[in-house]
Length: 449
Image (cartoon, one colour):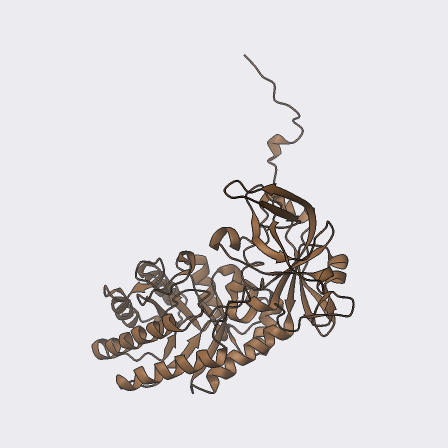
């Protein structure tokens, strides 16, 4: 499966945006995250254009939790998108990339006072309220700062997205938002309207992630428009904004076919306009928060092959070949968290048949399998493996488990590779690791008694 600008060059190697991936691995080391800038920009443009052509009031907010660096903020700004952040760290990154605060929404189901204070002081577009305690805290902070803060009320529409349970967020039993069915959402709107320092601008929902059809989004639109009608009839308030979140899936495997942006926009826009007409409501600004759909297929992770061993399969006749690589769950925890499945290309043998079944194993002190029983060409130590569709949530969720250094991130465009995140060093690893002064100079504790 070749994606975006990928091709097999004359040397039989995987090339991305004119860059030979084997040469990149030699120059920058592995594991190595690669991001295809042209794919990111093209998907930003297509998503925005698809809805601009089908709905008159449209704002696309890139979901920074999928992949966020200061350079990514620059791309999002240049492509005319807003930005959705989910923590003080993401907000800080955006502000220090000079991203316009007036185009930022802040999320989070347990925002701290410091996070809310940063949002108030920076003048972002919206705080997306998630619970009553946060509503009261934000109201107090805004009043103390003599400011009025625009808010969206996050709601749980009670829609089952039929995705992995760990990335389902729109059902009734969820930690996110105010439940519609038990009346919490209406009560939240009522309290916002009664708070002088808060300005009610609309409602928000998010049903889940890696969705490969439109059913959950259509169900959410219907539930949210019904709530808009109830808010207007009961409280006399108009929802200027309807934010339906993100969640559109990407191709992790060749047999996955998420809706094209244009088809997705057709379904959502027609469903929304139909529901609004039925309830005689004015068209709100439609906000969305694609993250994975923008960057997922733009990312590739390179690994170097190390040990290879073939072992008997205990539960069935046959053997399994484990190919160990120099990364694993520290740079990609998704297989452990969500049973995520990927495909690969052997970058230095990309023109050879990938017809042997192997299991790609990470180097960590856990089961740590990156890809179980996948196709590859004949492998040997030193080969370079390129795992596809790692642009979303890999860099974002990376850790230092086993004190492994986090990889560098390169941005590729027209044969040029720019470092946008430097590879960690051992000095970085110990930068915040402090030994109390009472331990210094003490070689051994003397046992007494």
